[in-house]
Amino acid sequence: MWAIVAVSIQLLSGPNVWAVTEEGTFESEAACQSALEGAVPRTLTDAMRIAWEEGELKYICIKVRGSTPAPN
Image (cartoon, rainbow, N blue to C red; front, side):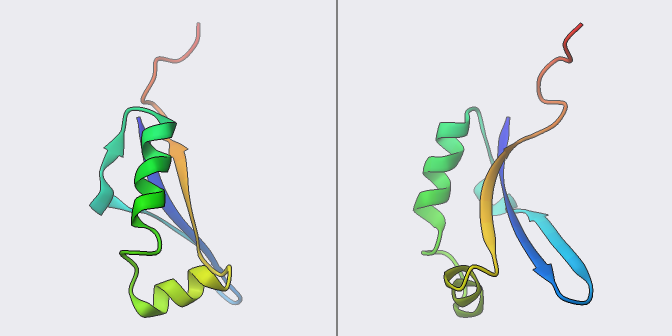
């Protein structure tokens, strides 16, 4: 299972990371990446879009831990 997360770092408070739940989860990294490319920047508010354009905010696809059996 894959999910989109947003990442930013604030000077005084440190990292902020949150799951982008509006897009749901995905069976593969390719499906996640496709949804990400379709949603960003189209669905961002003006402030979020500016932060994204200036590199202050990143969206990535990441595999959800525990979504596959642990190796023996």
